Image 1 (cartoon, rainbow, N blue to C red):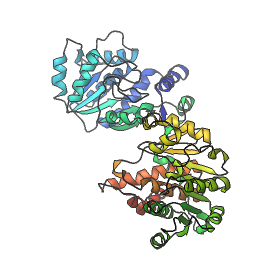
Image 2 (cartoon, helix red, strand yellow; image 1 turned 180 degrees about the vertical axis):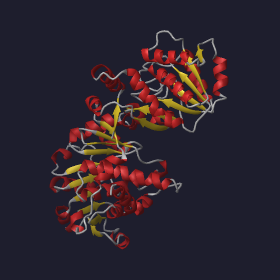
Image 3 (cartoon, rainbow, N blue to C red; image 1 turned 90 degrees about the vertical axis):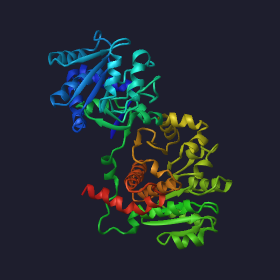
Image 4 (cartoon, helix red, strand yellow; image 1 turned 90 degrees about the horizontal axis):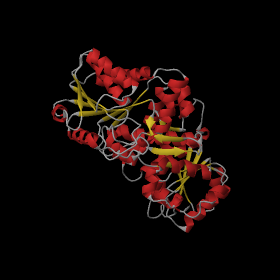
Length: 500
C-alpha cells in the first residue's frame, strides 16, 4: 500500500531522513530525478520551468540529466537566484559549470521569450512550487501559470501541480492543469479530493529510497490500495473442498418496485464464489426471480422460514432494492438483535438507520455499511458537499464510533475499520450506471462467506469491482452492472493465477 500523507508528515519524513538517518538531502534530490528519467525516454523538445525552492532544484537537476541524455532542453527560473535553498544552489552551479543557458524570469524580464518558448516546445515540465506552498498565487507566478495552462504542450508536474494545496487539493488562486503528475514516495492527501483530479492528470508515484521504517514513523494510517495488497486475499479453493466450505450467504433485497437490485446482488454473490446463496425478497417477485436465479434459492421475507434462514446464514446482505419503510427497519432490527455472523447493510438498509444509529451499538454481528455520499449525508446530518470534502476524516470517525467497517462509495472509495483508512484507486466513469452498488454488495458478501475478514473482504471487493470495470472499459464504452457480474469468475481466476 502507498502512504497518503499531509504536507506536515511529508516534511517530517524528509526531516527524519536527513537529520536522524543522515541521508544527504542532495542525494534524495538525485534519487528523485533518477526516478523521473524513464518517463522522458520517448520525449524531447522539453521546457523546464523552475521556482525558488527544492522543487525548482529538482527541475535544475532534471535539466542536467536530460542534457546528458542528449535531449533538447530549455530551462527557465521564475525569480532571481538569491536566497534559494542549498540544494537548488548546488544544481544551479552545476548547470553554470556545464555552461547551460539559464533564463531568469521576472515581471519585466524575458516574459516574452518564455511565452514564445512554451508555444514551441512539445513538453513542459512544472517545477515551480512543491508541497510547502501555503499562500495564494500572485504576481509573476500567476502570470506564468496562466500562460502555461494556455500552452498546448504536454504538461508534467513534478511532485505536485504548482498552485495546488497538497492537503486540500484546492487551487491556491491559480494552479497548473497537468497531463501527468509524478509525485515522490507518498500520495499527497489533497490528491484524493475530487477537485484536484482536473489538475493532476495521470498520477505516478515514484520511490526515492526513503527507508520503510521512516515511512512507518510518520504514517497517518491512510493508504492507497495496490493490486499486490489485495490479490492474496482471494480464498484458495483446495481440490477437496465442497460448497459448505464457501459459506451460506443470504441476500435480503427487492420490493415490488425494485426487482433488479435483488437479482444483481444475488447473482454477484453466486458469481463471486459463495457456496450457497439465498435470496429473500417480496413475495410478488418470488416467481420471476426464482426462474431467473437458477443457482440461488429464493424465498419470501415475510414468511416464517425467513427467521430460520437468519440463524443458518454465515453472511447477510441487507438492503438492495428495499424501500425506506417501517417494515424494512423492523427486518433490520430483527437481524441486528439476533444474527451473529457478518452483516452488510446497503441502500435503504442504510437509509432506515437515519435517527436509529443507536441500533448499531446493540448488534451481535460484525457490520459493513456501504453508503454513497447521499446516504452518508442522510444518516450523519452533514451536507453532501461536506461529505465529499471530508471523506477520510468522516469515514474513520463514523466507523470508529459505531465499531463497523464503513465503505463510502465514489471514485477513490474510502474504507475504514476505525483504525486505518484505505483508499481504492480502481474504477472509472464508464461504470456510472444503475446497479453497481448492488453488485458490489453481493461481491463483498460472497467474500465474507468464504471466510475473508470483513475489513479485508471490503477492500478486496471494492478493488476487484473497480478493476473489472476498468478492464472492460478498454473495450466497452459503458460497463453495466451485469457486465461486472458475468465477468467475476474470469477476473477472480486472473488474480489467483498471477500469484500461482
